[in-house]
Image (cartoon, rainbow, N blue to C red; front, side, top):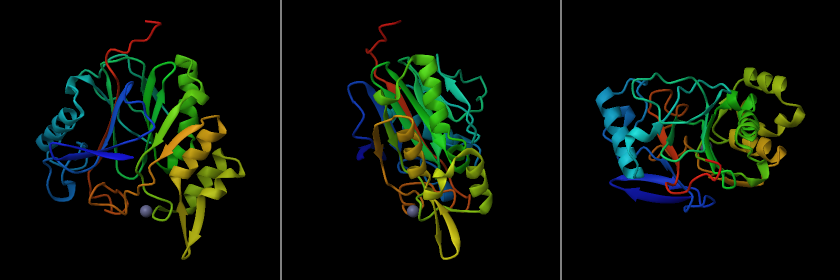
Length: 268
Ligand SMILES: [Zn+2]
C-alpha cells in the first residue's frame, strides 16, 4: 500500500486498484479533531466521543477524499452477512440499515465503513464497474461473508470472481488476535476442516488470522487478484484504532470507496 497525506490526514491506498476507474482511501486516525482515547479522526458516533467532533471528522475525511459528504452511503455494521446495493447516497434523515457488505455500480456514491481491528475488504470489478466494501471480524469470517458478497454481486451485477480485484486492509494480525474456544466452534459449524490452518496455539492461548482466512475463502471461489496490506492495527496504535489492544476504549477509522465520475455503465 502507499500512503497519501492531505490536510494533516494520512490514508493508505492499494496499488492494485486502477486509479483511472476508482477513488479509494483507508484513513488512519491522524488529522481529526477528536481528543483523548478517540484521538483524532474518529468516525464512529456510538463509542462515547463528542458528536460534534465526529461530525467534523466526517467533513475532514470527505474533504481529504475530494468528495462531498452528501455522496456518503453507509450502514450500521453488525457482524452479519447482509449485503446492500446502493442506488443513491443515504439520505441524512434516513436511519442506517444493518449490514456488513455494501456495493454499488453508480457514480456519485461514496461507500463508507468504520473499522478498529476487523478487516476492511475492498472489491473492484473493472469489467462490470462495481465497487464494494466488506466488514469482517471473526464472526463475519466464520460466516464467510467474503463468499456471500462475491455470490451476491454475481447475481446482482454479473460480476465474475476472476475479474475482481480485492484489497485486504489493515486489521488485527494472527499474532495479536487472541480468541476463545467459542470462536473455533463457530468455524467448525460453517467451514470444513480448512479453518484449522488459520488458528494457532501460542503460550497456551489461541490466535486467529482473519486476513489469511478471508484470502483463503476468496481464492477458493476463484478470486485471483488479491492485495494484502499486512498491517496490524493492534501493533500500530499511532496510525490505527484497535478495539482489542485498547480494550474497547477507542474510535473507528474510516474507509471510503467511489467509482470515478465520468465512467458510466454502458448498460445504463
Ligand atoms: Zn499484530
